[in-house]
Length: 385
Image (tube, rainbow, N blue to C red; front, side, top):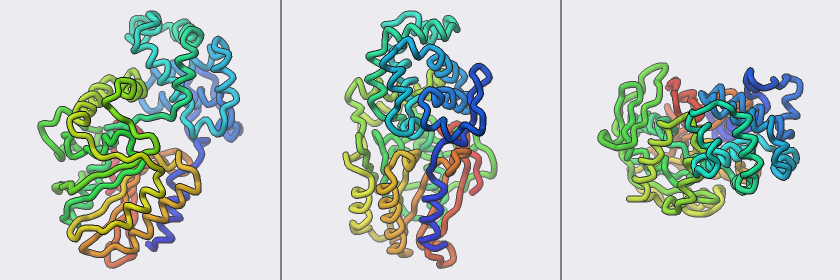
């Protein structure tokens, strides 16, 4: 596959609007197919759409929270106005997830006993608890609405590890990892986690961070992964020594996924002990600079990213992908280059783990293939590699 063909594939398949995602759950009014184009511009309807997505992704609790917020939204007039008149595409901005995180933060702080009781499973009156929280905690939720989502999901590291094992099987070299949209850099620490990839172990076996997705499909090749160096970039990198930053990350974990929260806490502890190098910058210029730096012979350079292309402005996305293609064109057998992307396809019906490598197999300019379909937060991997 030529570099031009790969670039066209990624620009066409790795991003797009969210209008083809599933409609809301049975407990909320369904969104007719013919109105889905309007959903991405209607903030209130976006709460329902994300309610359906949360249910499909295995979080009935968050689904009910968002449905209740949709019903009770007018109890918080300023919040209702913001949601209804969201500047830009509320789906692309993950507006509903910001609101959900604000509610989760209020519950974790314990200032609203009825809301905390709901989150603790002591009652199931979503309308009463969420409505009161919107009214009393409106100011706090508005603060959360002002910040982009920051999940930095540790579970996605399993997909990256599986892709690196595939590369290691052919390259037999250590890896230099470059991640854009790295947040706090938790996925750059993947070799410090204990991975169970369908019975194939990887990483650090005695690590307190256990990453064990449900494995579907063929077995992944077992090959040792050696990390030479890691470096990341984010427009707003998270500094985990800040208690508020840790609160943000934990509040973005869905409240009925306690195992994810526990795993995140262990990953944060590892990060605080030895944080990876994360720079504050825009993705495209940082990537252009990194990819023109000398590459050590016998080291495979890898660009990686997860769930970030949809958030980049079009011009920056094109600039970043163009830099990747140029780096691929310069790759040689003793200085190979690879690109691992974990992103939604264009109609947001599936999350694809795609591996592109240079030089390509059989002397091709570049080889690109979808290794797996994945759960958005790493709960399962359907391996196609």
